Image (cartoon, rainbow, N blue to C red; front, side, top):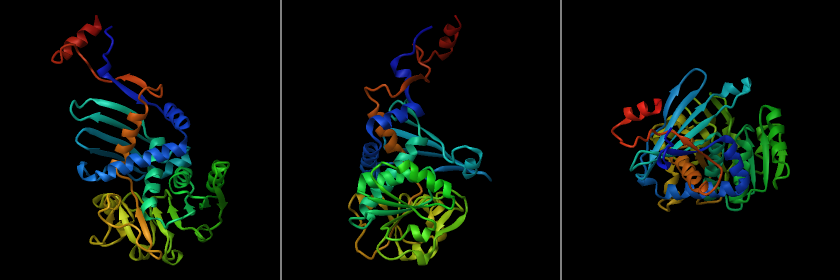
Length: 348
């Protein structure tokens, strides 16, 4: 049988190879690198096609497609969110992604993105904190100690110099898991019994819970002046974590308003509620943190450009390595008009 040509082969990064790549690069270095790629793409935000993610909701979760293009490359991510999966021994979130060449339409990368999404989400949070958190912030409250909590903590350590994390989850086993995983990684870990205890002395408050409901993880009276809130758990319609009063007292920063107004914390607020797009801060068009008493809030729901940045990073990073295999995904007949002839020859 005729062997496929190089242009018909698509590099594929499996979960195993992704983990090998992370360990080879070092997780904190990879988080820094991903944050750099995201920041580069936020600085050229206006070049990208932008659309809210395409979501298919059910009673048990959501399945989404997240596409974008910068005119030269096109990327999309398939991702689900099923909070009930944890009770069945399954991941709440799984994902894969593809990057393609706009000129030919040919895919140039296929990769797992369950692990990669955890990394890019954490890297984006820490990149935002670099612009929005109080200067010299060293302590974070991590409320919600599920699959994202360790990544968030290490990204803040790697990118803004976090020294201490205070953990709380309504499931004490999740807190024990997170504390155990962070042992020996150069950060002080304090396990707390209440969210009020967790936020004591913290300059950054990160909320990341999974239940698909209108919840109040932080009440208005829990949040004092001068903190940065990294709200990443509210990421679909009908799911929030913060009391509306907190939003009213905060300067709120978002990725893409048409998506965040549907899925983020600001779905609770009037349609004309004022927000600042994070790319405007990163590109110097608008201010981020302006005062010591200011409450900044990153209402993060995740956006396709962040996934595009992560795909771009993996495409560049695997060149010359063995952290991928080539997949024969594309039909490549000698005569592009003779696909049927290629099929017939294969029979012979």
